[in-house]
Length: 142
Image (cartoon, rainbow, N blue to C red; front, side):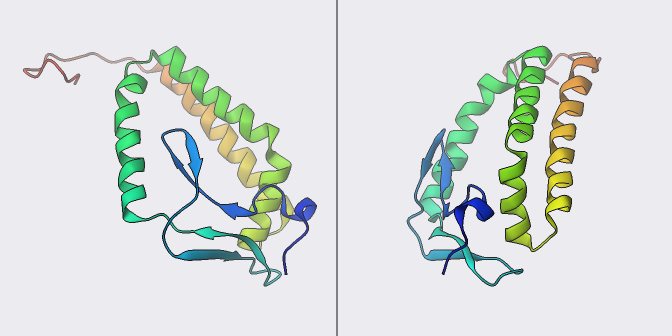
């Protein structure tokens, strides 16, 4: 027996993000059981070792482009994440409360704090002063 979608929020199946696309796992079946209701709130399949390796490879391939962004571009990315968290706070808080068996008010605070941390990281990154030291390896910055 499942939980109403309205109560549950947005999560009803487990998927893995690989290279910007959501995919079904292809290993053993998994279920997320709410400790507060005992009901299944999400189900799917675990990621296989090959999928994990593919995800790590995709993340590694994306890193150089992200590393070459300016501090202000990275700040914009972090502000975007914070805005997305705030936009979805109610559905994410419902999911978190059901998944962890915590009060909805506490889950809202947790999502808000995550958004605040992204905003702080965005602004702190713009204020970092440092120097790039010479390196024998021209592909690295120190």
